[in-house]
Image (cartoon, rainbow, N blue to C red; front, side):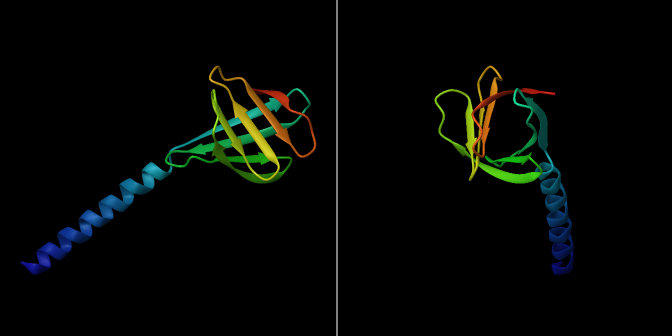
Length: 103
């Protein structure tokens, strides 16, 4: 009987591991083009509150910050704001805030 329980436990753990991996794969990618010519890609993963950017050829991980309306993410040199209506702005390096649209 002990052997059957061990086999059942292994099968259950394997099934849980496979379903957990599928949930971790859920993601959203968006491509943006800004008024100043900047282009970037942002990724959001289910279960993770951060935003992952590829901007100016450099990766950046942005933490979610407190926002009055919509969502705000910031890291060392980038601030991304996404309003409730979808209006998006980005500020990076020493450049001014610029409006961006999904492409």
